[in-house]
Length: 313
Image (tube, one colour):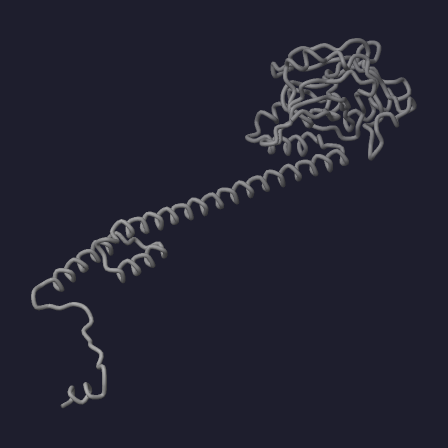
């Protein structure tokens, strides 16, 4: 399923000092899994230019306000010139650019750089996998509202002047992605903006709910299929038993046929009973067919009272 959404990813200022003009080298996005989706090398190489000369604001748009609600008084810097792609310390592709703080904010950014972060705000499209809950970014839009914003607490890898090597040493030493995020948040101090964290938590909860519901639906379907299969099996057995009784009808007595039919309807295995009934029916017929044995009802009606008197003479 293809969807369009705003992407929020941490960026990192590289090095320990600024360029002569006051600009810092910044890594905007790195190849791999980020906070908002998965970014491939091909994606970064093809679309990095959408971040050329983007502005930097005091923060991402908050609440219900869209990017159009921001004004120029909130600008704190910009990416100067063109961005480019090169390998990071992991050997993975990343988009880089030069971040130039606004003169009115330069001193404050440098003063509080250890407690601040920067994060991209961009519109993009991607594929959402409903089975895994993963979102793969397939393109960035060249949107005038794309920006690289200063935030109080950036997402993973978003701290000013933080060495990328240190961050990825923590990441590589983790045994699971969730544990890695916890290590980064606690030891490096990289926590998401509270509002964004709440949003992501809500999305994660929704996806978990959908996954749980899907599992429950799958289990219910499996149970229903099992019940249906068992019912079909019982019906087939009953039909087969009734057919066997009908096939043996000529060799059985009427009372035996009636009894076997009732047993078949209850789902009982009548095959042994049919053979036993055949034997009994055969022996009965042979016994009644011997000389001196009469079969049938014997009786005569008396025509008159005189006949009755003669009978009891």
